[in-house]
Amino acid sequence: MSSPHTPYVVTLGVAGGPRIWPSPDQERDPRAARCAGIATAVVVNECVYLVDAGHQVFTQLARAGLSMAQVKGIFVTHLHSDHTIDLNNLLVFGLFELPEGRRDPIAIMGPGDRGVLPPVSPRATQEPTPVAPERPTPGTAAMVDSFIAAHATDLNDRILDALRPSPAERFRAQDIEIPQRVGFHANDNPSPDTEPFVIFRDENVTVSATLVVHPPIAPAFAFRFDTAQGSVTISGDTRPSENLVRLAHGTDLLLHEAIDFGWVEAAYGGRSDDTAQASIDHHRKSHTSPVQAGDLAQRAGARALGLHHLVPANTPHSVWRTASETFSGPLHIAEDLGIIPFGAPDDESPVSRDRADSAEELPAYQENHS
Image 1 (cartoon, rainbow, N blue to C red):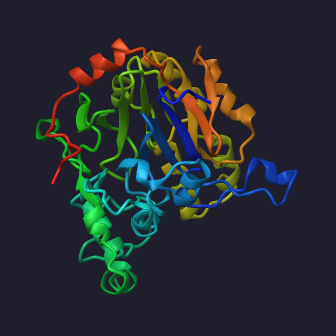
Image 2 (image 1 turned 30 degrees about the horizontal axis):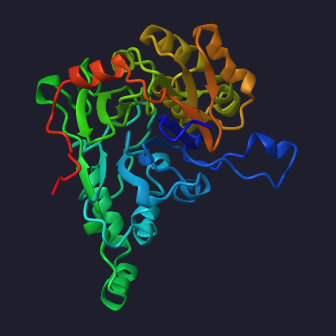
């Protein structure tokens, strides 16, 4: 356990994908808990900054001894459901854990509306029918509005009868603005080379973002949290990305996704149907092996590497440890509710300070944003 003044992450949930994976312990104990979905708490000076909101995030936050009252920001890497499915729990259940006198809303920051549907898989034999054709690609702010609207019956009961506040008063959702000069286009140029840019700053952290490669979804972001004591970079879902290497340069801890491509072949390789083959296509073009993640961490000069967003979450650790073939530093195989420090108390990190000062500036979300 780190000291109260050492920043650290709690890997609230480490499983990736829209499934409920069995725990690695379930072969020995069928009653063992299933793996929680991807969510990470960055804890600095007893304040919490959440990255992604996979299934069980609200419960895992409590199990970690953290509370919604400590949360100052929620950052969404991309809008796949395994990263957002329990954001509604934070909005609705979390509302009742916030102090009545709290004035500053919790920032929720994530991708905006991609503006165009992704291309249809070349394996399709007929044109698929999209969901919600009137608004098929809502961004983070619109998604949060939809979550709140979906619970209107419950919330209006509590607002009118119990005089409770609305989530719209306690949370402030904002789409991350990508610098225009980057030339981003969701289909034509989804991950152009770019320098990191600042999206949020308060008294504890400076948060920078960059575009990573996770087709077909776009935009997809990685985030870096710089503090006076150290830095952590969180990849989000991505295949190997030079933007990620740039963002993670000299970071104290790189938390990177990892997939077991052997499992992909075992799960889908024996099938010839278009759905199975399209699934193989997706995993290959959108994710990173442990060996590749190790190489990225080595090239970035990361002081330590942690693997999370594990697919599947019950793959033997021996597979994930192959990252050590390409990374020479400390390697953490993240587990639910694991704690990984990423800085030293009372020791300002020049690397963190320089990164925070040099990242391209955008109008960052300030604590007193209104």
